[in-house]
Image (cartoon, rainbow, N blue to C red; front, side, top):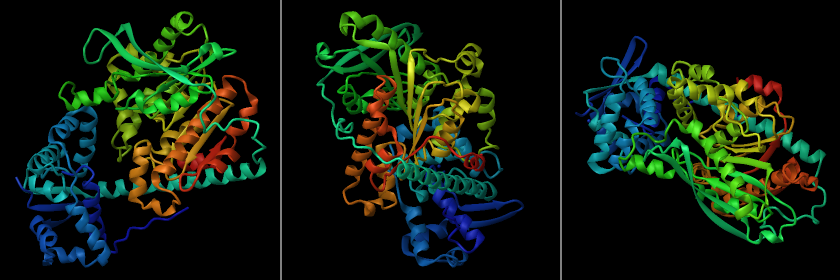
Length: 562
């Protein structure tokens, strides 16, 4: 396992420029004149004028020399980059985000890191500086934000900053340990049970034998409310089926695919069409309380939040209602070919939460209250910010009872597949309710839904005897995020081909896994079991996005991750 060390020899210089790096992600509109670094009863200050002079022409006064003298030349260059790198930002969208519940929660954390001169939470000061800096030139560089900080002094709680850094480093260590263990287990399993001759079987990374047609639906659920328009809940869905149903000798298993937060069902049309070509019906609902349109409604000023907290309940209900509607239309529109005794649910991110909930998992609200306590978890990842919004439902006992006790599982579901799921909110008590076969996949570079708390632990809590955990190296939350991190860490050097081609191989592998899991656990085609083996993913995946398969996480690793 890799070891970490801070690159700065002097404590205060290390802390000062760690602040710059962290602040750029969501940094703190009269101009701040001093940055005051507080550590317990001790303080040091740094004049903003000194920082500006250094960035503009390289001037190093006595105030700044104390810090820069402790840095190597390449580290000094990095500091300049951090201070001056700007990010293009739409001021209206920025304002909407930081006044929305998820943005406000992020600001509360930052407000503890950057308190006011009176040492109160600096949430409002940071928000004002962000918005005014963006309004000036559409950029949010750290220097620009300092110019718009609304008080003369910008404080930094170095004790909290260092504890945050320690938490981030500990999480990185746990991730590295998990990757190493998964790699060892998977490679050993592949060596012990190599792939048999698969030449008699189709290659599931390639399209299947059936041409596919696409059917558009608009569903109306009169028992639930539209989160934007009011009235009955209307939401679109798309169904992919083989084009000629008469060519299908038997029936079609049904797979429902649930998209992530701020996304759309269309993001998975390629995967759905691919799976349908193997003789499945694949249905994709758009969850209107947390889809791309709802996100855009926030930035258009039509809503006040990024997603409706009610979607913790509505998403699973969307899936069940869609299945109900397909069942009603089976004879008239699908020639009775849809088989509702063979149903699977798959989902990505918030859709992964949806899949696990439809599979029977329940939210552990008591545990979630503890986990969302800022004193318990200093650093918030994107998944935790999302999860903590479920606490807004505590004033609705009937909803809490439904998703926290009774559950919203659908008895028709025989297989659960969750890609980069948001799942820690279930806890061991909630996720152990799932009895069906379960596949969970996570990426080692996922900073939005980190693999250890969101996927590894969830997998370890499963009681289902048929469970699979796929861990993808150097992979983030989505193909887009993976591309960004690959370029950030110069992973292109590890490719014989380009990044997009490497991502394409990974996406094709996921298509193959969907087909193979459906064939084995819905159709009962045991001949496809080799595609669910460690040998298959070890052979098929490619550097640097290698996949590893674990069927059980060692107890010693789980204990070290707690």
